[in-house]
Image 1 (spheres, rainbow, N blue to C red):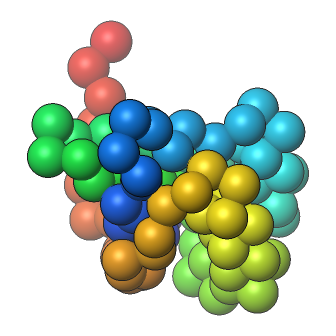
Image 2: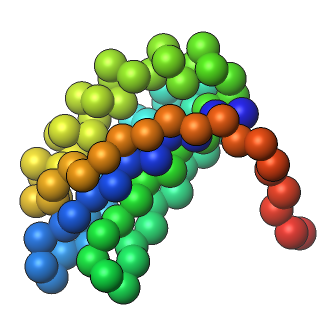
Length: 94
């Protein structure tokens, strides 16, 4: 499994939370396994998207870039970074 982590800085007073439509558009991309969106006390937010394999991660890059830019504009936030990772351990406690 692979993960893309995008870091944002929302405007003051905003969480930058994506719309349900945006979430569904990401989840509809081929190979997408899931999505988290988190906000820190320090005012930055992260989107963490999970991908079934490297091919799905790489194949989603263009669509993900467009969705990220669109969401950043709609939610008034700056995109600080985008990084891809291989998930080495995957465990969720039941």
